[in-house]
Length: 254
Image 1: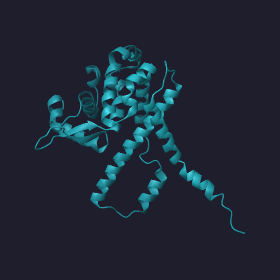
Image 2 (image 1 turned 180 degrees about the vertical axis):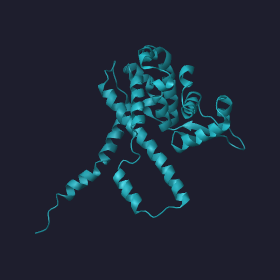
Image 3 (image 1 turned 180 degrees about the horizontal axis):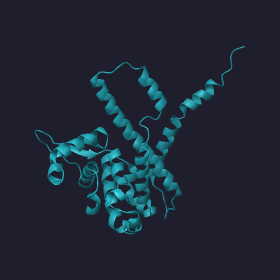
Image 4 (image 1 turned 90 degrees about the horizontal axis):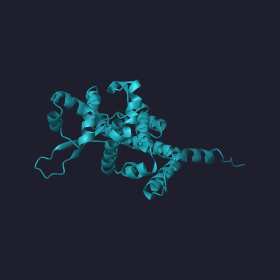
C-alpha cells in the first residue's frame, strides 16, 4: 500500500497490512521491519488481532529445534485488509481525490490485490480467490466488487451463530464454565466467526456475479461446485421451518 496511506493507518491495521503484503511474520520480524512501532506496541497489537480473530499462529515450515511462531492472516483478517483498499479520509484520501484514486486503480493497485488474493486463496483454500485471474478475464470490475463486499462485511459483520436464538438459549441452560472451558469457548467463537465471514463473503460474491456482465464463456466447474455447496447449506438452514410445517399440520386423533 502506498506510503502516503500507511502513514495514517492505526497500528493494528499497519501490522495487518504488513503481514498481508509480506507473508507470515514472527513478533521479532515485525519489530525489525516496522521501526516506527515499539516491541511492546507490536506485542499488544498482535494479541489484540489474534483475540479478535484477524491473525492466527502457524508453525514454521523450517525444521528447527524451537519452531518459530509465525502470525498469518485468517479469513477475517483477509477481509479486513481488503476493505482497507477502499479510499477513505482516515488513510489520507479526501472525497475530492476519490475519482483520481479509481482512475489509477486498474494500473497501480489492482495487480497488488490480485497477487494478494492468489496467495490467500492458496493458504485458505478459497475458490473465488484462487480463480481471481480467471474472474478478471471474464468480469471487468470484479476486483472492485470484492473490495466492496469486504467493506460491507466489515461494517456489518455477520453473526458467528447461524441461529443466534438457539445459541443464546443453549448458553443460558449451561452451567458456569471453568477457565479452561472459557478458553475453548473463545476458540470456538473465533472458528464460528471465520465460517460466518466466509459464508457471507461467498453469498455476496455470487450476488454481484449475477449482476455483472460477463465477457465470453463463463464455464468454471470450481465456482459452480462452490455455488452448489452453498445452495445445499442454505437448504439445511430451513430445516426448522420444514419441521414446523409438519408439526402444525398434524391432526389430533378423533
